[in-house]
Length: 215
Image (tube, rainbow, N blue to C red):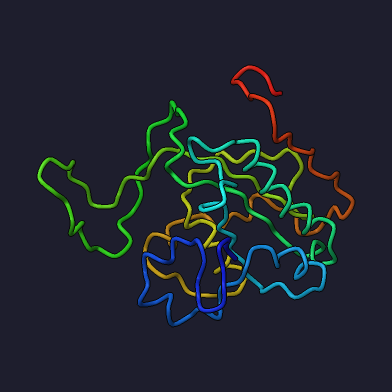
């Protein structure tokens, strides 16, 4: 689900970098505004990826308002949390690698996904073979089955979410990278769902936000 969607258009999604594939699967894209209604009506697909904000300023990239982006993300969670779909859902919130947030932990080593070396290195580019991750980014796991106050100390990358989906639906790995990842089941207690969890706090959307205080 994306912003900027229209019939015959994928919307504001990174899948537009893969036009030859995306153009053949436009029926799998939808307007992000339909998420709340689909959740309420029990019509969500088994796996939904939400990409949002690129054109309407509701993301948290530099120069955009972090508060507005956070409030937009909260609106999707609240719509799911208050719907019948919540009882058997898992909601991941994460970020891409371009946020520029400081991290004192060096990138971790990982495995080359398919044995193919970089094909587009230019003169002066540092050498690489896809065996080093980027800097860490935040991850929030929301679900009636999520362990309260749990903090993972397991190293993983974005494809761990793919591994989770593969484990859930008994699917094979796509390559060595997702096969290498943990399946994220450590975040959950499947025997004790909490269907009465508190709602997310409302996110302010105006006023400055500093590193040492909120508006």
